[in-house]
Length: 154
Image (cartoon, rainbow, N blue to C red; front, side):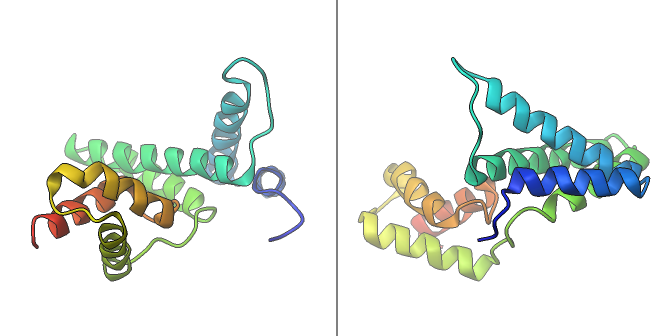
């Protein structure tokens, strides 16, 4: 682990992007830092987010970009989808490497074995166990799809 927090790295990279006049990168980093600040002041009292919480905010923003790009493509607005994809690429630079399907399936199978799940009724239990090990390295929808597939004998 480095000495600087993820939030500090984002702020530093924002300053670099501004100096380089990189509008897309600086706009994307400004947006994610605003989301982090909003998360810090949400609730009863303001607090500093730790790296795991900052990572969750970045992942949430990345998911929004992915969904928006899909919606724009479905609406036949490829130029807007391309902007969302470019912002997503910036955000992915701060996320842990995503798990491949084989790795994800192995995690799900371990979660099923340790939880003793035998069918779809225990899907929530398996999801909870699997998400703990996945830790932001795969979208929840992908995890759920593999859990369903394995639990239904696939």
